[in-house]
Length: 100
Image (tube, rainbow, N blue to C red):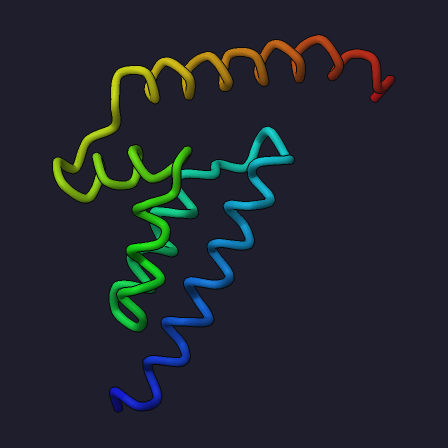
């Protein structure tokens, strides 16, 4: 069973790294959340790859904070709230322009 599950965990990790990378460019996709899931998948299949995510210069501190304390930094919470508020504002301003 272990032999079959390892490729699935690696594929899952690669998939979530891809989604997280898309989140860098698409504002509504969460980057760190997908990288957290990828690190979890890689920790079960390829721990060296999980460690590479934890050492990432920009996203690594957020991932390590979650791994070590199960918490998100205050700055991360403010950034998430600000992004959600901005997205809500943009959707609210553009929803009426569609003519639907």
